[in-house]
Length: 134
Image (cartoon, rainbow, N blue to C red; front, side, top):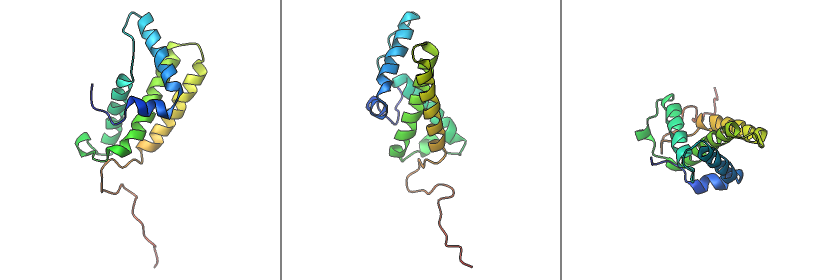
């Protein structure tokens, strides 16, 4: 497993439906002849990959990320987005609920990844303050 910013507990604490969604993904994987999915590792790894792509667009590399606490929320949101989007594909039971949650977490993630400051002790762009008196 790749090191990620959040834990399985962070994900289940953020959304109580996440465990039910994981069970649905696991059932679908087993039905398709695959292995049971017992934790959120795969979703967290995919989320981190997406985060690094989005930070790369801001010229921030993984080695520059020093404020890992700030990254927990965006990784949880991205992992939940990916999880609920997966469940919406796999199941027809409550598909609308899962799809709606996926859209909600995608919107949260996109809003927060644009403003998160992953580099400790460095202000992000637009974070300065001036009185503007002339």
